[in-house]
Length: 144
Image 1 (cartoon, rainbow, N blue to C red):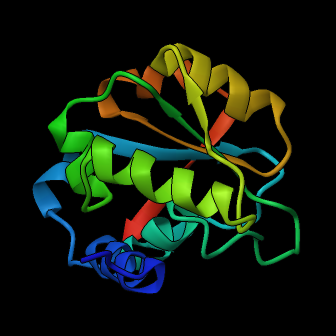
Image 2 (cartoon, one colour):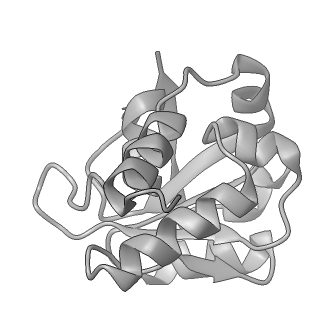
């Protein structure tokens, strides 16, 4: 029996909005380009951004999503998904013409560089790398 695409899409959307893990939030920080006006995001809005449901900042600038390819399970807990589910979600979304794959960088340093040099960019990096962002990006708090 073939499962209709709409059911698969709905299931993936529901998975994306399962409440997040506070432990995962503590290991990572959200960085944005200096031109982004937001200073706080809810966990839900972060997931909406990373799943392409929120595509613009409050000032209408386009959101440019980035992340480091090689992330551990804690990173994916932050988004309440797995890498496999995330990739599958985006491939289906891109195939249907409803979005463009986020930029997967080779390292967290690459995420920092991308966010620093790309208008409207957002990235998730380990908290231990906070010192590396200097003034090139700004940190956005996660509010529940």
